Length: 409
Length: 172
Image (cartoon, rainbow over all chains, first blue to last red; front, top):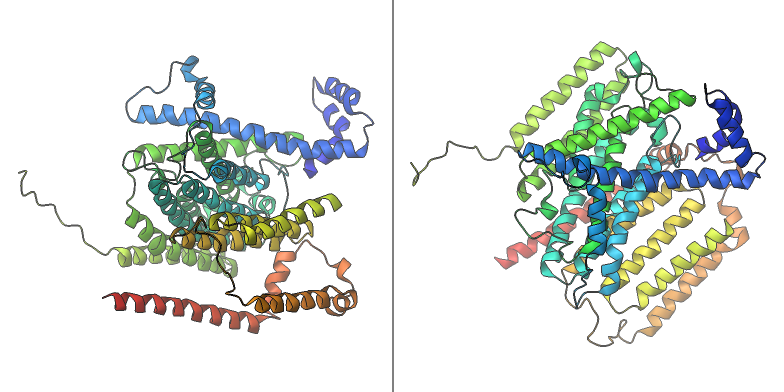
């Protein structure tokens, strides 16, 4: 928002600096907004980020579904959607039209108002998450000084939508599905937030922009990314797993394991309300991928990114490239990994992820206080590896023995 | 700012009134959440972003979810069995509580009382390093109350476990 405002104030000089079409753009800008009062510029600088968030990210969601269906199809030796448009490119639009025109069924004994409110409550927190994700150098919708905390607070509010949907349907399966989903989401929140604490400790700020800025510099703007630190790598893995469980992506999609059990909290939803649940879930997943990129993968930093007009454009390119990579990674995992069982899910969260994230916080402290870099590298790596091995040994309760076939030999 | 304050206040008061007057327990809970959001909005309006985020994180993300989980395990959610006496005829208890809270609020809101409590240069405090300041204040000036709270909460946690365990033993 601030960046847009500054840009609007100096737009003519900036635009004139662009080769070839700069003069034309500057004259166009002068004709449109030259000498506009202050409040108009302020209103535009507020409206631009909002419009960007509500138009670009749902668009990414639409095409994520297409990429997901295509990629899953290829993984499963199918072709995937290929009928609507070339390579199925219009498939998301067809899906949207189909869901919009479907009949909206509300169970007779459902709580009508809450049943209507739940899909809305699922989308709003997911959209709000994007307000603190920096998409380029200095380009963040709202630069809150507690940006990361705000993101976690808002993402916990999305649990309410599961509750409302499950309870208002007046269906046992919905209610059980909602409780299952809530148990998963709140138990994976703990290791996820603790994994983020490591980054906050290293940077000394909760602002997402400051976290991204702390990872600039180094070789090609790449070597300072936190994922290339021992604690950063562990944090990245922990946070990615936590974020995937939080947004109920495979292998943690027990809340709506479509091939095994009744769908869960959205059993009684059809048509566009169901689509809104899906939208909320995917948007939260994309926003969490954006926050992962910001915290561990250098955010918008990459070769050539930096301040100024062209550096900013390149930084936006790098951010969206990394976001795309994270989205494709989750799809890849969905296509290739089996779903975990519910007891495995819980024991993994409490016996491996939670202790590991606490160990990781200690590793950040070691990294901070050992000033000689090679010793810090070796020390933190050893510390993390030793704990990982120990935790694995401790958590392994039953030994898997060779299977004996009694009837099929 | 003024408009935002009135809208948020309307939401907060409406949520609070609905939370105590609706018949359905689940609707009461949702109104309570609305009230929590209103309070968080007020914190954001007062530039206390940290408090606002913590309000959402703890009251909505934890307390409300806990109440919801507990409520879903109970019967009589809809409140259709007719009116029930809440205080059991002890209306004077409610009146007494209301009087005490009103007196406390009056004592706190009065201008001179506030001025005595707050530093006079409140306007000069910078809002940029708020989280760090809160953290430093917690582990430096207020470390004893913080630790006392931690001990209290741990005791409560152990107590909860003990109570739950006793029930398991009694069932066998």
